[in-house]
Length: 428
Image 1 (cartoon, one colour):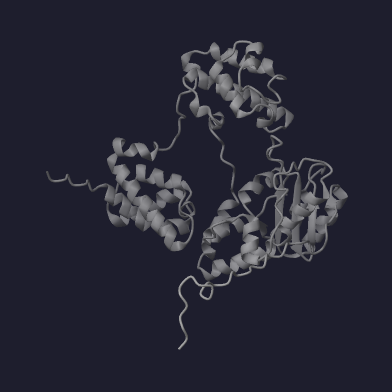
Image 2 (image 1 turned 90 degrees about the vertical axis):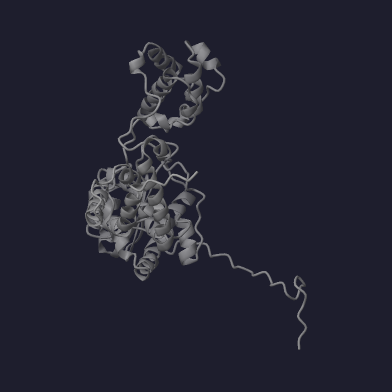
């Protein structure tokens, strides 16, 4: 009989496992030349049209540097065609590329980021596969491209140039290598994830989500100035009016110069100026915290904006809280509408349970805004069958996909009925 070592002795401690680092992803075909002429685009388009299977596509913007959301580089890869890097800035048109890709499936990662800038240059898919969204549906905890590639394919990607100024010309070679790598394994990643969607019974969910993305349009922000960092600290409607006026003046300058607004005047400078309300240039520039590249250069603009606000009547000043078309915040429901509060609490718990059962984020199970709207103003009927039909119709009108309605309708019907039951008063 072998003696059993005491717990904690070297004999019982497992040896530390040595994990081999994932190999670094490299370009299989080398770095292609950048296509920046109409003649080069014709060659690229012909090659891509002759390729087979889906097309991996990505776009690089200059977020944080430019006001516009335009694409400054477009990367494409297709079996039989290789990788192509297209500079759309000097092109007359990208119509030949759109024609070459007609009818093919586009593979994108985080499609909502790239679709608007691709559409701006005339590139619109008729079918797509979003690897990020598919990763969410499969319950991957982290769905960034580099993380998915390492998790699914076992290869590491470089990400050191993700925040580069892609409006720079000429583009440095290391940046171009980084950009080309973003489409290097998208096709392989798509195939692995598609197989997993089939295995888990979520392929139809993904198809409906991808079809929904084809009509994606960025939300138009109402009162976008209210997103100014620190604006919540302002007291009084005139200070809010000053923040709005300064934000709008900054936005106009940024749009004209095609520079991201924060590079002209930071949000913090808007807040301190709106608080102090200086009356002239000297006082403005002496205001502690008022700084930025455009603080002095556009000082007359800032002073004029503040002067206009001082002359506004009370009715012209912005309201303290933004006006929305949706229900009030759920934290107010318990006092304002107890039944709605009961409905919402029951529905939220059910959504969390369903999301856990199906291994996906709760916000992908059902858009949170849809849930709030439905629980605040549910259908009038309380017949279970009729209520289920009405819930599905209301969800569809809001924008929920059929797979979502099928999964959540039963739970939401139950939550609505729970709201009608008032809690019993505790016995004294």
